[in-house]
Each structure stands twice: as C-alpha cells, then as structure tokens.
Length: 378
Ligand code: ADP
Ligand code: MG
Image 1: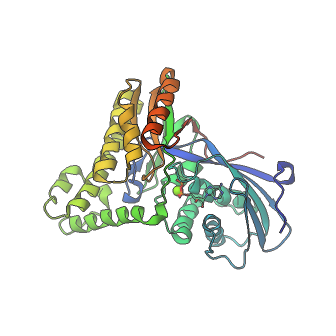
Image 2: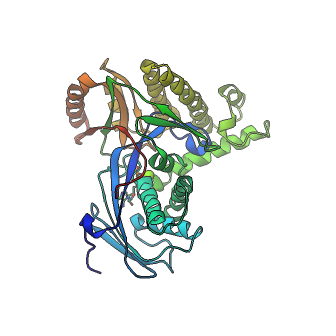
Image 3: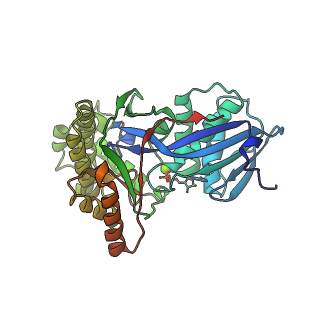
C-alpha cells in the first residue's frame, strides 16, 4: 500500500480527540472511587474516509510514521502495539453493529506519549468516535468510552479504569468532571482558577504501564478488599471503605497492602474535599490536597520516581506554586502544578535548569487548558 494522503481535503471527516489532565483522584478509578479530570488542548487529529472496500482498512500515524492495514473480517491482536488499541476498538464496535466497512484513517498527535496525559485513550476514543460517525453506527458517547477501555484491557493488556476515556470524550470546556467511577454518574464542576494556571512538567522519563506495576497495584487493592470482606461482607471495593474502617485491619494486612489501601481511601476523601474547595474558590485548599496526594502516591502507593519527587519538592520553594503532584499512572510522565500566572516563566526556567543539573535530562513544560471533549472538526 502506498502511504495515505495527509491532505485534509482528501478526507470526509475530521475528529479531534484530546488528552486529559486529572486535578485529583489518582488510582481511584479502578477502585470505584471518584476522579476529577478534564480534556486539555493537546489532541490527536483523525482524518477519515470510506475507501470503497467492504473490509480493508488502512491506517497511518503521521507522528509515528507507521502504517497498518487490516481486514474487518479478521480482527484480533497483532504484533504492533499501537495498532492493537485500534483493533480492539474495531472489535468492540463490531459487537454493537455490522455497519462498518473499509476506511482510511490518518492521525497526527501533539500529545506526549507515555506521559500520563493519556494518548492511549485519545487514540482509542478518537477512532471509536470517528468510525461511529463515518458509518452512522448510532453509538452514544458513553458506549464509546467503554469500548475504548475494553480495547485497552483485552487487546493491550492494561487493566485501566474508565477515567481517561471518559475525560477525553465527555469533557466540557472550562469544567472538570466529577466522575463517580462506580455508577458512572458525573457532574461538571466549573474551574475558574485565574490568575492561576495549570502547568505540566514532563520528566521525559517514560513508563510502560503494560509492564505490570499498574496491574500489581490493582491486585494489591483487591487483596485488601478480600480481607475487609471477611468482616464487612457488603464491601465490594475500596470505595465502600472509610479510613476508620480500614484502620481496624491494620494488623491483619500485609504492610504493603495496607499502605496501598490507605492511600486509596484517603484519596477518596481528598477528591470530594477538592470539589468543595473549587465550589468555594478556595484554591489554596485544592493545592494542599494535591501535595498530600503526591505524598501518598510516593510513600504509600509507591508509583512515583526520583524525577517526579524532585520536581514536586522543587515546587515547594515557590510561594506562587500552590499545588503539585505526579499525574497519571506514575513511574514517570508529568507533574501537574497550579501556579500563579506571573511566575510561570521564572519557575519553568529554574525548574528546567535544576532538573537538568540533577538528572541530565531535559524537562518539557507546557500549560494545559481545560477543553472540550472529542469533537468533529469537519
Ligand atoms: P499514555 O496513555 O499515558 O500516553 P500509554 O502507554 O497508556 O501512555 O499509551 C501510549 C501508547 O499509545 C503508545 O505506545 C502507542 O502504542 C499508542 N499511541 C499513542 N499516541 C499514538 C499515535 N499518535 N500514533 C500511534 N500510536 C499512538
Ligand atoms: Mg494510557
């Protein structure tokens, strides 16, 4: 196959699929807790057209400069990881409809990969949203998020929660989403933080969640729940456990499992407290919660790394930074910082310098603006 055209004029449908940030509520989604994410102004742009074939689909990722061709009659995981996200979504859509036919799809992205901004959910959901539009499949947005999550579970092997997909697809500009990952009930919470800004600092240390640490955390939480269930049979997940209840099991749980659970039950309280803080315009309280979250993720949940810890500690030297923490799965990626707009330039410069001196790695900083979820451009 020759390379697909990258000229938008050659396509009938253009879709923007954003990455996301999460203000607070980390590693809580798969524990049925709450999260507070929103889409941002970094995205994958997809271009789609029907190609006249019944079955042949051609893909091209411009920023990876890689092509992939597959048949709708033979959709199963292959040896190219990036294509597996897409194949998993196609498989998911096929469970709902037989309307899919051959298509060409080119995508180009400015979401840093493997940095906790969820390029994977943007990939899954943009593709799902696009083919749904192109072939008029009639799937609603929530179904598209679930298909994306299942693709990541079954075709890639990361047992992710629903947060990333939900934020990418459902966000509304100027808001964060308070999402209850148990019921999928959600509420938009306006985020007015001027004169503060959201600054992401990318350590450029990359994780690979599929590597197993993520799934290990998940299993540790589940084993904690199993112990709690011996006394409280109505507990289904850490969502149902308060910090006081958990304390009863301190001597019955392995220390590591106890620490994991302890972080999660505290984090649930912090998310709800942060929503109240946002509603009251109490940014200082929001920021304090973010610092506490980082401490929990670093010491109890153990998903930080020296680079992330360094940046969060570094931020504490600046009064203008009111909150900072690792964002996303961890083991690298970005910190999210709430910083006064007047200090962004100075702080960024000094953080870059200090980070380079310490680790000999270039830091990348960028502002993130809460943005609309998946949308049709044309
Ligand atoms: P994150 O979601 O935090 O960015 P993940 O490891 O979950 O990190 O997902 C990254 C993977 O998603 C990449 O390794 C690649 O397989 C796929 N991916 C993301 N963006 C693109 C893209 N523009 N083109 C092709 N594949 C992509
Ligand atoms: Mg991901």
